[in-house]
Image (cartoon, rainbow, N blue to C red):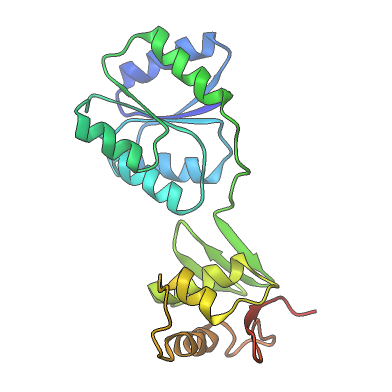
Length: 225
């Protein structure tokens, strides 16, 4: 397996690199949290082994950010933080397994093998594109034709939903439930207002309109034909 180890303790890293290498795995080290995040998000891995306490960014934040961006690579937390609350917070953050230091090497190998046998869901991309519009889910950046757009958090969520359903008509009810978490009609023009603001940022000043109103049905974000 191709494994990314995010670990700042060199002795532990060297020990794992030698041992897992002998097991036939390809282990790559990132000794800083931020570097680990970018490598985890930017490349394809079979497994991430992540320490909790790291310089730059802690392990929980790394995994939460990856999961928020749609990265589903299995994660094994490997850490000295062994309390019940620590284990629970690690698993709730998106970790798949949790092993406390000091650990038995045979147990580590068994857990790595078990995670490797789990069926993998199709990896979700962290960047969505429609025509010349691009949304980076990890960096939380939106660009059109290479130009960065200033998008507010709710507008970002709305745009992400539209882009994930590009070419499909999404109704007002769908947007209320999935963007605002409303399971009732608030009887306001909140959807229409945000669509209008988003259009002003995504379409205004560009040759082709991407966000369209489908009269009597809803909205559709689609590339020009």
